[in-house]
Structures are given as structure tokens and as C-alpha cells.
Image (tube, rainbow, N blue to C red; front, side, top):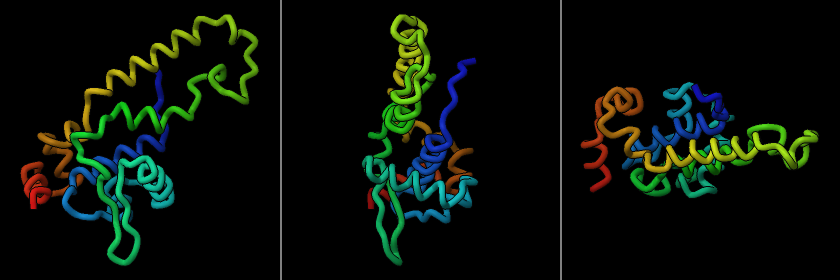
Length: 159
């Protein structure tokens, strides 16, 4: 098994994106996502803000506000989401700009091997779209939007 550990931020971001994709055609609220996806509203607020800044989400403030996908689910590549959210987190000490105290960094081949492994991980996620994660996944749709499958979601988008 690959020892990569996805950060909590990326985990929550994927839940948010999947929830929005499953509920396309309407604005969803942070409270809805928190309840359905078992995430704190504080963590959600930070992640939603970042996803909005990156263009993955559209946020609308105010009494009738909420959020929706910033682009079609079929245009959101999972590799892109992981790259931008995981990139700031160093895989190992030698990848840290400030806290690197490893004396082997300049000559270490492990660093190159780890870089190659991480890029292979991201490349494996590149062909997967957000839409592919939810469509024809009735079990997931039943959790994220009970009673509505992708056909109903797509019909709502067409209106």
C-alpha cells in the first residue's frame, strides 16, 4: 500500500465538491454539507473559501446564498484538485523550504524517487473527473442527494 496520506483539507474539499456535483442545479449551504459529510463548519469555511479562490466553486453570500460548482463537474480533474491543495504540504523534511535540516538533501536520490512517486500519483488522478466519481454511483448519490440520480441532476442543469 502507498504510504501517502491525504491532508484533512483535501479530504474535506473532495466531500464539498462531490456534494455540490450531486446537488447541481441549486445552491447548497455549508450547513447541509457539514451535516451530510460529517465535517465541522469551521473547516468547511476555510476549504470553501480556498476552493472559491481557485475557481472550483462559485460562492454567493447573503440570505439566499450558498455555493455551487465553479465549472462543470466533467471539467474538474481530481489530479488538479489534489495538486493545488496538497502542494504546500512537504512530503518529507527535505522538501520543506524553511525547516529542512537534512544534511543529505543535495546528494540524496530518495528525494528524486519521492518526487517521481508523487507525480505518478497525481498523473493517476488526472484522467478522473468529478463527474466520474458521482455518476453511475447510486450508493454515493443516495448519501449526497437521496432520491436523485445523475439523470435528475442533469435534467435540473438543463433547465
